[in-house]
Every structure is written in structure tokens, then in C-alpha cells.
Amino acid sequence: MQRMGMVIGLKPEKVAEYKRLHAAVWPEVLSMISACNIKNYTIFLKEPENLLFGYWEYHGEDFEADAARMAADPKTQEWWSVCMPCQEPLETRKEGEWWAMMEEVFHHE
Image (cartoon, rainbow, N blue to C red; front, side, top):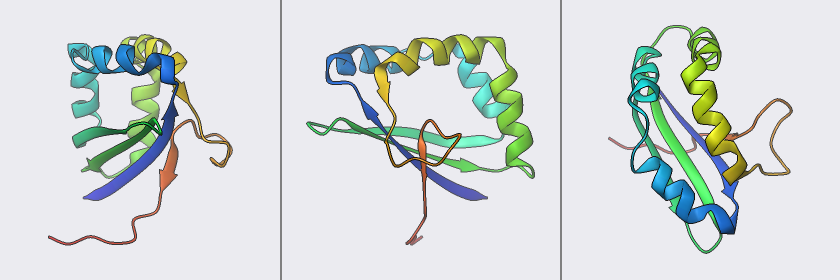
């Protein structure tokens, strides 16, 4: 199992919409997340800075293949097209990233 964390900004005028969207995530999107071996997917919001912190646990063998499968899913693409206008990527993210991936520096069970 691999723990993964990521961060992105949230446009101030989109906070309420983003919360509303995530209070009722489409069932097809949730099914695809599970089918791609992702568990314990959580998104936290830090206001007033409007930073979103995402966390999940990957239980598969090939994250790149599972991520590509998710990205190819039409319903997931539709979901992203609704959510992405709310988000504000960090200027410091790596090339090709939307959410900036984070390094795990500590874990305790």
C-alpha cells in the first residue's frame, strides 16, 4: 500500500460550489476510484487560504496504469470538467501535474 498526498488551491468564489459538489460525488466516479485500487480518498480544505489537501491509499500494483484507466473514463472526465474550474493549481507544481504531489516525510501507525 502506498500513501499519496497532493495539494491545490481553490478559487475563493468557488468554495461553496466545490463543497456542494463533493457532498454528492457521482456514484460512477466513486466506483472508478475504487476500481483503480484507491482507498481512503479524502480531501481537506484549509480556509481562508483555500488550499485543498488530498490523501489516498493506493493498493494496486501499477499506479500509472490505474491513473490512465481513470483518466480515460468518460464519466471521470465529465466530473473533472466540473471540478477543475473551481481549482487553482500551484505555480510550483511539476510539469504535467494539476494537483501538486507531496512527499511523505512522516507516518506513524
